[in-house]
Image (cartoon, rainbow, N blue to C red; front, top):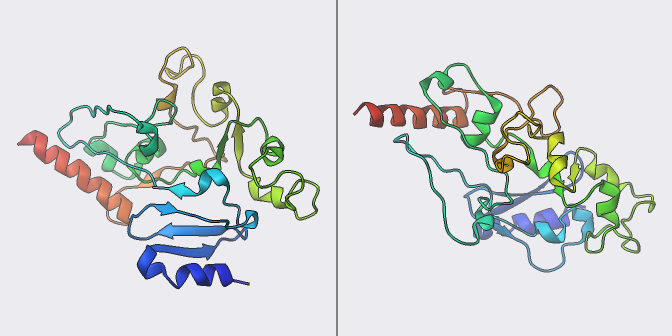
Length: 230
């Protein structure tokens, strides 16, 4: 009835978090000013926000404008998406890439964030396996389980379950000869599959000032070119 959305939005000026309901009936929380989102208490499973999704700080993008490599070291790097188990997009970009369309994988590395990586469910071989697991909120007796008649499984229709590293091949280019196979030790830097109908909705992006992201991308490239020419 919209009570939860109204309650969250009534304090959005304080929390920085705005709530809405998407086309699938799921609760969508958005941080307009870049603050992290942390949910405390029991929000209920019907919102499709599971225990491992109660805290989110977005996606960090790093840009180096002088052409040098970016070296990241330290502890607890997984918290910012740069741990050994995280998939990391990276690219070296020149003025050439700012003309017309930007390749989907280059755009992802530049921070366009157009790929729906929230569709990847790690640690499970199937959606039914995830829903039946303890702590998912959809297991037997929860009222939201498979067979309850409430069709909550339809909310995972576009989700890709990946239980092992080999399952990465459903989404990423990790086959032998790609340079990112399991033997290479570089699988976490693999490029995404961009063929039509791909699971993550990956697509080329538009450069230039027609979009905010495109304009920011061109500004980064131009600043790099200026720095190197100087």
